[in-house]
Image 1 (cartoon, rainbow, N blue to C red):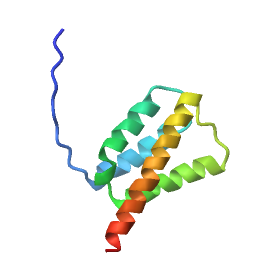
Image 2 (cartoon, rainbow, N blue to C red; image 1 turned 180 degrees about the horizontal axis):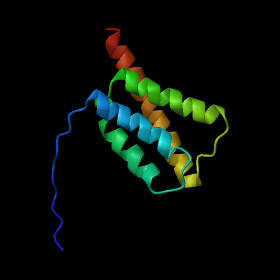
Image 3 (cartoon, rainbow, N blue to C red; image 1 turned 120 degrees about the horizontal axis):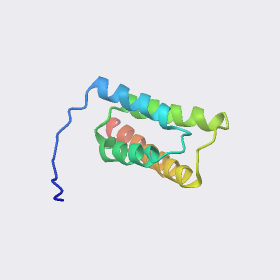
Image 4 (cartoon, helix red, strand yellow; image 1 turned 60 degrees about the vertical axis):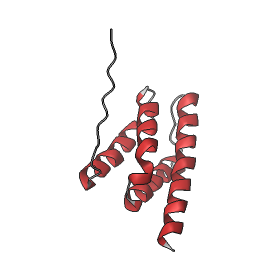
Length: 100
């Protein structure tokens, strides 16, 4: 079976960013493969997302953690913690760029 690679350009619209926020809320705490898929996808476009969306994701992450929710399996927790580090770093860089 031949695998074909298709490159697609996705315009980041407000609707797509809203969908990503909804997806994150849905995925958090689930014990499924979708955690890695979600985090990998968002990391791949993180620098293109609006600061508002990034900060909303950070707030959702912080709220989830504050209420002592389960991150799912240990591998999921590790994936979320790496995602959070990338998210924090991207927000920090964006704010530094905006302050120049």
